[in-house]
Length: 281
Image 1 (cartoon, rainbow, N blue to C red):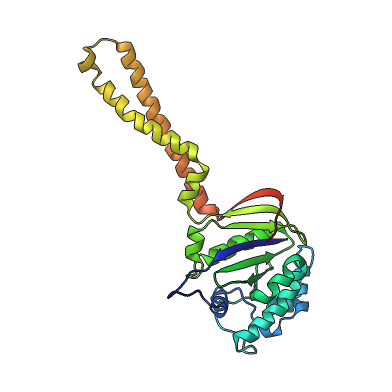
Image 2: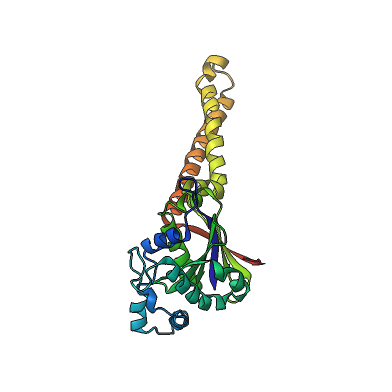
Protein backbone atom coordinates (compact mmCIF):
# COMPACT_ATOMS: atom_id res chain seq x y z
CA UNK A 1 0.00 0.00 0.00
CA UNK A 2 1.05 3.59 -0.39
CA UNK A 3 0.10 6.94 1.06
CA UNK A 4 0.18 9.88 -1.33
CA UNK A 5 -0.14 13.59 -0.69
CA UNK A 6 0.92 16.78 -2.47
CA UNK A 7 1.92 20.03 -0.79
CA UNK A 8 2.87 23.49 -2.01
CA UNK A 9 6.28 24.97 -1.33
CA UNK A 10 6.76 28.37 0.26
CA UNK A 11 8.60 31.08 -1.63
CA UNK A 12 11.65 32.79 -0.18
CA UNK A 13 12.97 36.03 -1.62
CA UNK A 14 10.42 35.70 -4.42
CA UNK A 15 11.51 32.26 -5.65
CA UNK A 16 10.65 28.66 -4.87
CA UNK A 17 13.30 26.42 -3.27
CA UNK A 18 15.40 24.29 -5.59
CA UNK A 19 15.39 20.50 -5.49
CA UNK A 20 18.79 20.47 -3.83
CA UNK A 21 17.51 22.72 -1.01
CA UNK A 22 14.55 20.43 -0.44
CA UNK A 23 16.81 17.38 -0.37
CA UNK A 24 19.08 19.01 2.21
CA UNK A 25 16.02 19.92 4.28
CA UNK A 26 14.87 16.28 4.27
CA UNK A 27 18.40 15.21 5.20
CA UNK A 28 18.15 17.54 8.16
CA UNK A 29 15.01 15.72 9.31
CA UNK A 30 17.08 12.55 9.60
CA UNK A 31 15.12 10.47 7.07
CA UNK A 32 17.94 9.91 4.57
CA UNK A 33 20.00 6.74 4.16
CA UNK A 34 23.14 6.68 6.27
CA UNK A 35 25.27 5.26 3.47
CA UNK A 36 23.48 6.36 0.33
CA UNK A 37 26.35 5.35 -1.93
CA UNK A 38 26.05 1.73 -0.78
CA UNK A 39 22.31 1.52 -1.37
CA UNK A 40 21.00 -0.41 -4.36
CA UNK A 41 17.72 -1.59 -5.84
CA UNK A 42 18.40 -5.00 -4.29
CA UNK A 43 18.58 -3.46 -0.82
CA UNK A 44 15.42 -1.48 -1.41
CA UNK A 45 13.72 -4.69 -2.50
CA UNK A 46 15.01 -6.45 0.65
CA UNK A 47 13.52 -3.73 2.84
CA UNK A 48 10.20 -3.99 1.06
CA UNK A 49 10.23 -7.77 1.48
CA UNK A 50 10.89 -7.39 5.21
CA UNK A 51 7.99 -5.01 5.78
CA UNK A 52 5.75 -7.77 7.09
CA UNK A 53 6.00 -8.71 10.76
CA UNK A 54 6.76 -12.33 9.90
CA UNK A 55 9.67 -11.53 7.58
CA UNK A 56 13.03 -11.00 9.32
CA UNK A 57 15.38 -8.29 8.12
CA UNK A 58 19.13 -8.72 8.03
CA UNK A 59 20.98 -6.84 10.81
CA UNK A 60 23.61 -5.56 8.39
CA UNK A 61 20.88 -4.19 6.17
CA UNK A 62 19.35 -2.37 9.14
CA UNK A 63 22.69 -0.73 9.87
CA UNK A 64 23.13 0.25 6.23
CA UNK A 65 19.73 1.89 6.11
CA UNK A 66 19.87 3.60 9.50
CA UNK A 67 18.72 7.23 9.23
CA UNK A 68 20.65 9.86 11.17
CA UNK A 69 19.63 13.52 11.76
CA UNK A 70 22.51 15.21 9.96
CA UNK A 71 22.50 17.19 6.75
CA UNK A 72 24.89 16.72 3.87
CA UNK A 73 25.52 14.21 1.09
CA UNK A 74 27.32 10.89 1.37
CA UNK A 75 31.10 11.24 0.88
CA UNK A 76 30.81 9.00 -2.19
CA UNK A 77 28.18 11.27 -3.74
CA UNK A 78 29.56 14.77 -3.47
CA UNK A 79 27.14 16.65 -5.73
CA UNK A 80 23.38 16.69 -5.65
CA UNK A 81 23.22 15.63 -9.29
CA UNK A 82 25.06 12.45 -8.35
CA UNK A 83 22.67 11.92 -5.47
CA UNK A 84 19.68 12.56 -7.72
CA UNK A 85 20.80 9.81 -10.09
CA UNK A 86 21.14 7.47 -7.12
CA UNK A 87 17.67 8.46 -5.91
CA UNK A 88 16.22 7.75 -9.34
CA UNK A 89 17.83 4.33 -9.39
CA UNK A 90 16.41 3.49 -5.96
CA UNK A 91 13.03 4.94 -6.90
CA UNK A 92 12.77 2.57 -9.86
CA UNK A 93 12.30 -0.26 -7.39
CA UNK A 94 9.65 1.69 -5.48
CA UNK A 95 7.79 2.51 -8.68
CA UNK A 96 7.36 -1.19 -9.41
CA UNK A 97 4.60 -0.94 -6.79
CA UNK A 98 2.92 1.85 -8.75
CA UNK A 99 3.68 1.27 -12.46
CA UNK A 100 0.86 3.57 -13.61
CA UNK A 101 2.84 6.65 -12.51
CA UNK A 102 6.39 5.36 -12.97
CA UNK A 103 6.90 6.70 -16.47
CA UNK A 104 5.63 10.18 -15.63
CA UNK A 105 7.26 10.61 -12.22
CA UNK A 106 10.66 8.92 -12.43
CA UNK A 107 12.19 11.98 -14.08
CA UNK A 108 11.00 14.22 -11.25
CA UNK A 109 12.48 12.25 -8.34
CA UNK A 110 13.98 14.57 -5.73
CA UNK A 111 14.59 12.32 -2.74
CA UNK A 112 14.27 8.78 -1.41
CA UNK A 113 14.31 8.02 2.30
CA UNK A 114 13.17 5.67 5.04
CA UNK A 115 11.43 5.68 8.40
CA UNK A 116 13.67 3.35 10.38
CA UNK A 117 11.20 2.44 13.11
CA UNK A 118 8.37 1.50 10.76
CA UNK A 119 10.60 0.39 7.84
CA UNK A 120 8.46 2.56 5.55
CA UNK A 121 10.15 3.84 2.40
CA UNK A 122 9.20 7.10 0.73
CA UNK A 123 9.95 8.94 -2.48
CA UNK A 124 9.54 12.67 -3.13
CA UNK A 125 8.86 13.92 -6.65
CA UNK A 126 8.32 17.34 -8.17
CA UNK A 127 7.13 18.05 -11.70
CA UNK A 128 7.01 21.83 -11.28
CA UNK A 129 8.62 24.47 -9.08
CA UNK A 130 5.67 24.95 -6.73
CA UNK A 131 4.48 21.49 -5.68
CA UNK A 132 6.04 18.28 -4.40
CA UNK A 133 4.41 14.89 -3.96
CA UNK A 134 5.27 12.45 -1.18
CA UNK A 135 4.65 8.73 -1.64
CA UNK A 136 5.16 6.42 1.34
CA UNK A 137 5.15 2.64 0.88
CA UNK A 138 4.52 -0.14 3.37
CA UNK A 139 2.68 -3.45 3.22
CA UNK A 140 1.00 -2.99 6.61
CA UNK A 141 -1.63 -0.28 6.97
CA UNK A 142 -0.98 0.70 10.64
CA UNK A 143 2.72 1.25 10.00
CA UNK A 144 1.99 3.18 6.82
CA UNK A 145 -0.41 5.46 8.70
CA UNK A 146 2.06 5.92 11.57
CA UNK A 147 4.81 6.91 9.14
CA UNK A 148 2.48 9.35 7.37
CA UNK A 149 1.62 11.02 10.67
CA UNK A 150 5.32 11.25 11.53
CA UNK A 151 6.31 12.84 8.23
CA UNK A 152 3.54 15.41 8.67
CA UNK A 153 4.95 16.30 12.08
CA UNK A 154 8.42 16.56 10.54
CA UNK A 155 7.23 18.81 7.72
CA UNK A 156 5.50 21.15 10.18
CA UNK A 157 8.98 22.04 11.47
CA UNK A 158 10.21 23.20 8.05
CA UNK A 159 9.99 26.70 6.60
CA UNK A 160 9.50 25.40 3.04
CA UNK A 161 6.29 23.48 3.68
CA UNK A 162 4.94 24.35 7.15
CA UNK A 163 3.04 27.55 6.17
CA UNK A 164 1.20 25.78 3.36
CA UNK A 165 0.36 22.82 5.58
CA UNK A 166 -1.23 25.19 8.07
CA UNK A 167 -3.27 27.15 5.53
CA UNK A 168 -4.06 24.68 2.73
CA UNK A 169 -6.52 21.81 2.73
CA UNK A 170 -4.14 18.85 2.52
CA UNK A 171 -5.51 15.34 2.06
CA UNK A 172 -3.69 12.01 2.16
CA UNK A 173 -4.89 9.15 -0.05
CA UNK A 174 -3.97 5.56 0.73
CA UNK A 175 -4.04 3.34 -2.33
CA UNK A 176 -4.44 -0.37 -2.61
CA UNK A 177 -1.18 -2.09 -3.44
CA UNK A 178 -0.36 -2.03 -7.17
CA UNK A 179 -3.77 -0.50 -7.93
CA UNK A 180 -5.11 3.05 -8.13
CA UNK A 181 -8.08 2.41 -5.83
CA UNK A 182 -8.28 4.82 -2.91
CA UNK A 183 -9.20 2.77 0.16
CA UNK A 184 -8.65 5.39 2.89
CA UNK A 185 -8.45 9.16 2.88
CA UNK A 186 -6.91 11.32 5.57
CA UNK A 187 -7.59 14.95 6.40
CA UNK A 188 -4.47 16.63 7.80
CA UNK A 189 -5.18 18.51 11.02
CA UNK A 190 -2.81 21.39 11.74
CA UNK A 191 -5.26 23.64 13.62
CA UNK A 192 -6.94 21.71 16.49
CA UNK A 193 -9.32 24.57 17.30
CA UNK A 194 -10.59 24.85 13.74
CA UNK A 195 -10.96 21.07 13.51
CA UNK A 196 -12.89 20.99 16.79
CA UNK A 197 -15.22 23.66 15.41
CA UNK A 198 -15.72 21.62 12.25
CA UNK A 199 -16.44 18.32 13.97
CA UNK A 200 -18.37 19.51 17.02
CA UNK A 201 -20.64 22.27 15.77
CA UNK A 202 -23.49 20.96 17.94
CA UNK A 203 -21.73 21.76 21.22
CA UNK A 204 -20.78 25.20 19.91
CA UNK A 205 -24.41 26.02 19.17
CA UNK A 206 -25.59 24.53 22.46
CA UNK A 207 -23.03 26.62 24.32
CA UNK A 208 -23.48 29.94 22.52
CA UNK A 209 -27.24 30.11 21.92
CA UNK A 210 -28.29 29.31 25.53
CA UNK A 211 -25.64 31.73 26.81
CA UNK A 212 -27.10 34.50 24.65
CA UNK A 213 -30.63 33.70 25.82
CA UNK A 214 -29.54 33.46 29.46
CA UNK A 215 -28.74 37.17 29.68
CA UNK A 216 -32.17 38.60 28.76
CA UNK A 217 -34.06 35.86 30.63
CA UNK A 218 -32.07 36.53 33.80
CA UNK A 219 -32.65 40.25 33.40
CA UNK A 220 -36.42 39.68 33.21
CA UNK A 221 -36.37 37.38 36.27
CA UNK A 222 -34.43 39.97 38.32
CA UNK A 223 -36.86 42.76 37.40
CA UNK A 224 -40.06 40.69 37.58
CA UNK A 225 -41.29 42.11 40.89
CA UNK A 226 -40.75 45.70 39.80
CA UNK A 227 -42.59 45.19 36.52
CA UNK A 228 -45.44 42.96 37.73
CA UNK A 229 -45.76 44.02 41.39
CA UNK A 230 -45.62 40.47 42.70
CA UNK A 231 -48.26 39.06 40.32
CA UNK A 232 -48.00 36.17 37.84
CA UNK A 233 -45.57 34.32 40.09
CA UNK A 234 -46.18 31.09 38.16
CA UNK A 235 -44.48 32.55 35.09
CA UNK A 236 -41.77 34.00 37.28
CA UNK A 237 -40.95 30.51 38.51
CA UNK A 238 -41.00 29.10 34.99
CA UNK A 239 -38.53 31.73 33.81
CA UNK A 240 -36.25 31.03 36.77
CA UNK A 241 -36.14 27.34 35.91
CA UNK A 242 -35.65 28.19 32.24
CA UNK A 243 -32.67 30.43 33.03
CA UNK A 244 -31.11 27.68 35.14
CA UNK A 245 -31.56 25.18 32.29
CA UNK A 246 -29.99 27.61 29.83
CA UNK A 247 -26.95 28.12 32.05
CA UNK A 248 -26.54 24.38 32.66
CA UNK A 249 -26.82 23.56 28.95
CA UNK A 250 -24.28 26.21 28.04
CA UNK A 251 -21.74 25.04 30.64
CA UNK A 252 -22.09 21.34 29.80
CA UNK A 253 -21.77 22.00 26.06
CA UNK A 254 -18.73 24.23 26.65
CA UNK A 255 -17.05 21.42 28.56
CA UNK A 256 -17.95 19.00 25.74
CA UNK A 257 -16.35 21.27 23.16
CA UNK A 258 -13.26 21.70 25.35
CA UNK A 259 -12.94 17.93 25.63
CA UNK A 260 -13.15 17.58 21.84
CA UNK A 261 -10.47 20.24 21.35
CA UNK A 262 -8.07 18.65 23.86
CA UNK A 263 -8.59 15.20 22.38
CA UNK A 264 -7.74 16.44 18.88
CA UNK A 265 -4.77 18.47 20.10
CA UNK A 266 -3.26 15.59 22.01
CA UNK A 267 -3.84 12.64 19.73
CA UNK A 268 -4.93 13.60 16.22
CA UNK A 269 -2.72 14.67 13.36
CA UNK A 270 -4.67 13.03 10.55
CA UNK A 271 -8.36 12.20 10.54
CA UNK A 272 -8.70 8.92 8.63
CA UNK A 273 -11.86 7.72 6.91
CA UNK A 274 -12.63 4.76 4.66
CA UNK A 275 -13.38 5.67 1.07
CA UNK A 276 -14.02 2.99 -1.52
CA UNK A 277 -13.49 5.03 -4.68
CA UNK A 278 -11.19 4.97 -7.65
CA UNK A 279 -8.92 7.96 -8.23
CA UNK A 280 -5.87 8.90 -10.24
CA UNK A 281 -2.82 10.22 -8.41
